[in-house]
Length: 467
Image: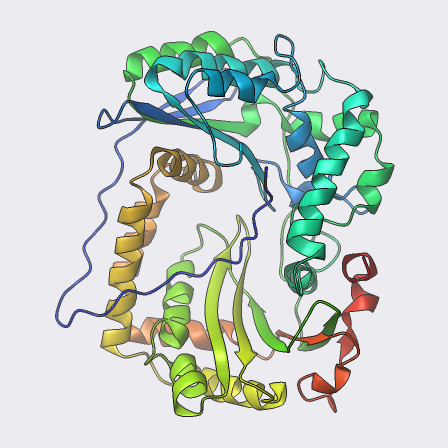
């Protein structure tokens, strides 16, 4: 099970002169809402004899509080530790015995906890029974004897993805600064201190209100008859008791000025510069233009930052711009790895120069066309897999109330003009930003423009960076 980093880069395809990007065909679906509030989405497709299943609880790290971080991820793991009719470890064993499997079975992000598997069509009913069995009475068939083993697994995940990765805490620091400490967006793999002190009773008390049918979307994509699948959902999930009203914190950007931060890491072998701004959430109308802006900056070798830093001046070996959206907020960031001993301050000057141009000058028609075609290609290729379809349908339903929200978003991208992308650059790439210098431990002289006042990350998030 993994807690994914949401800092993902969209690659751009080569431009085709004069060609327009096609509109992506929406997935065909039907939707069922049970009296207990559970929403099920069905995408029937008989092209291969398998079914992708997704169970998405609207519950993630943003719902945690100070002193109780990491509990959402802990609960994800504990849901595999036995249910009323399934012994610990048997959930995955039963799926595999029927010929099914999963890439990692479950994920906890800032906004949701997602369980998923792909099974042969003949095993759909078994898989739905298994999912319903643990939803019916979450954490009631397990106890504190399972807790230490699960904590060890999570500790290993954190060591692999954060503590042993150079500058592995950069994402947590970036999100923490952009969204503040009252209701911060944070990743699912937080420091272990809170988890080490959490009791089983505290874990169950905190998580149980979110593991209810009125806070979940069950999505199916693949080889089934919709009428039969609807009957299974009603049979296995319909009798589960509705939970109380579920609320979530309101996420608001906290940036009102520039903050300069230095992150030291003994695993770092060179310096890296990240500049980040508050972005927008999954269903915000500005999301497409922000992604187009990122493509105009680093989508190809002729894009602004790539051309200036890697080809014209050869100051960097890597540069990427990306907009990363969560449910209710996002991050627009630029990250650069310098070539050789190039100072981060020099990199920052070039970035600022190119950003200034983006704010004052629209991208070319060719740059925007390239992005539109890449956006359409990515959607089509991604949705070939049944599991990806189930994921997409559940995310759209949970975060936008529309399983095929992606089609409206892609259509909005097709309508983008160069002037609209320029306007977005002027709106979001403001002086209110994070400038994060990532340097090897003891190399604070490599910080970008060290004469400007900066904070040491160890004082902002000591448990993140000192482990």
